[in-house]
Amino acid sequence: MMCVRFPLSLRNVEDLLFERGIDICHETVRHWWNRFGPMFAADIRRQRISRMRGFRHWRWHLDEMYVRVNGEMVYLWRAVDHEGEVLESYVTKTRDKAAALRFMRKTLKRHGKVEAITTDGLRSYRAAMVELGCEQKQETGRWANNRAENSHLPFRRCERAMLRFRQMKSLQKFASVHASFHNHFNSERHLVDRQTYKTRRSAALAEWQNLMA
Image (cartoon, rainbow, N blue to C red; front, side, top):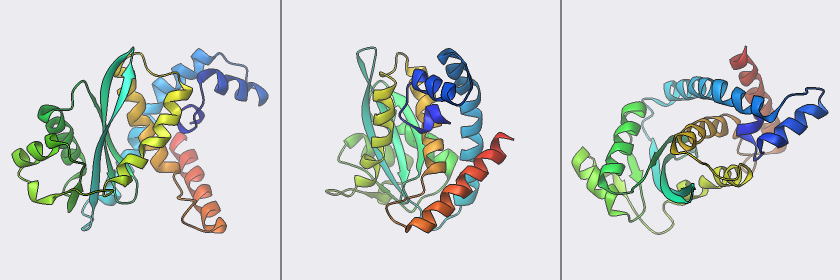
């Protein structure tokens, strides 16, 4: 949880655990998150999908960001709903119509129907939506997609702490796991009072402990 949730390197986690009396190597932390991270993330994602399916006023925001992998620029596509929940993360080498189509098909298959989809001016989105028959749901406009663009910030902080990625496969895995963990522990502290935030934080930790059990 510490490795994925917070912008920490593997060695930072090793030092923090040592202060708590747990003496392990940073490679052990890597092994733990590689083995258990996708498992916990899948359970979190499954519970949230079951709660949101059929929600009538579900709105999505789609955006792509560039990530350097061994000096090569790749694209991380992300779908975020109107509440800031990261629904899907998908890595491709291009951002053309074919890449947008694969990303949107995957998102629609997993999460179901949506009322409106907000995107930027990238023409690949329009071309993909025309083929999928949902072009009437597309919305564009200046600052309309800030929800998706701001959702990149937690991932960018972790990317800097981890000194970037070396393989597309590891980037895809980390992006998916990080999105689920961020959704679970995101209590929107800037929108609620202190007492409400503490209640939500305690509930998230209790649910996390049940998940690990």
